[in-house]
Length: 373
Ligand code: FES
Ligand SMILES: [Fe+2]
Image 1 (cartoon, rainbow, N blue to C red):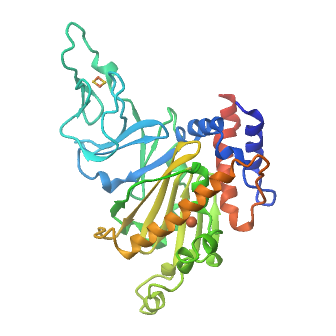
Image 2 (tube, rainbow, N blue to C red):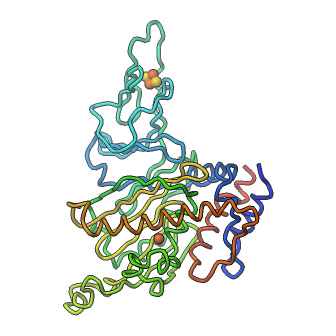
Image 3 (cartoon, protein in one colour):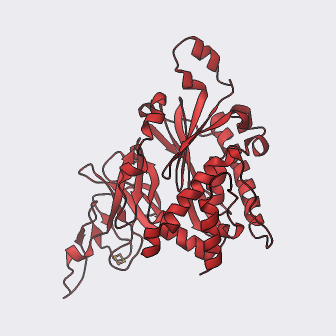
């Protein structure tokens, strides 16, 4: 334990904008901090997993490791989505391989073929000899799951806060974009960044860096100067911006067939790790998961009105390009986090959303209730 660093983290994370500085640099690589965040944030709050429509038919699943926890989200034959432990109740082998797939009738362990139903009940264990296996004692543990705007979230806590509290008041800010039109999900491969997860998140939510890091890419469409802050609570934050007229916006507005928000975007941040960008054309996101104190995964995805036909299209190349710019800058910043005499500097007005994020972290890590636990 490093109590001094945790104290400094708490002080920095709780500061309002006028006093707010970047968090102490060591919290971006310290192992104790990382373990505390996994426990109090990723294993305690609602975490995005995938789009509901990616698991539309019975037997379809998404298996993943969520901050060390093997999980599978699976659509049962009864139509229900469940979040189950992906760890076999015999000797702990991960049951389904990470990624998307479809089970046959049951989940069969690749080690000794213990067999579970799509709801996690133990159905049978072969060749157990004289030993009776109590089936009720050997079910796959189940975790809380909730759906919102076509997205699936899970919560690994034994006593999760209601999901409705997490997104309370948010929908009304998104309604103009009519997000229910976006039914077709896509996801591209996860990128692995040599960067602490918070650096990747902070980089994903602030628009301050666009004019410098993305001079030739994002800045040409969503310039820093046209970005604005909307509102934030401890559970979600919303910013937005005006887009340059690169898609015939004016013409579309003049024909009267598009709402006024057509040339605006909303950045929807559901901490700790979901960063969505909502426009009138779709809801795209990146999802960031920690993979160690100095590593994280970044997975792009989205919901659109029609199915993606071409992942080589100019639009996807554009996304790959600006995400590569983000990867390079985050990995560079990560190296700076080891500076012995380095110290976080003052945050500026455009970084209000970082202040909100830090206050969220403070709430998760240092609330009095948690200290009492
Ligand atoms: S570990 Fe799964 S059946 Fe043995
Ligand atoms: Fe960026």
